Image 1 (cartoon, helix red, strand yellow):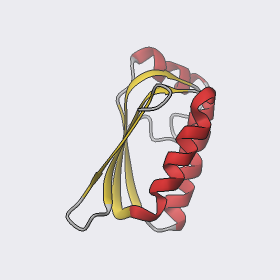
Image 2 (cartoon, helix red, strand yellow):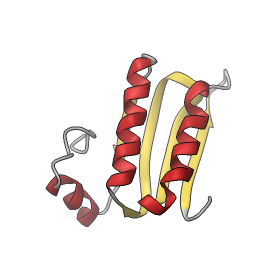
Image 3 (tube, rainbow, N blue to C red):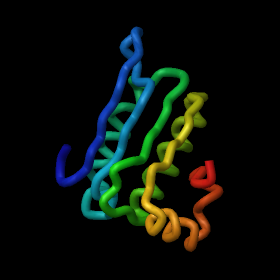
Length: 108
């Protein structure tokens, strides 16, 4: 955990990452660190990845932009992914209010 950001990975038997857990302060002040972590795992991903957003203290649009860019990268690499959101109702409402619920699979 660095600067209030939780970024954990779990690998399968082949050593490739199957699970990502991202949490903490997912705000612009931490966007460089989050970007570095996402780029760092890109080449070590399994063909199927579960991304869990949990234990979120604060979240803003800078994180959503990074996540959407990461999702585009996964699509280009033909990596299947699932995003699981464990957010407080207030945090979900903020993302719904800016119209991002469908783009980031918030309804799933």
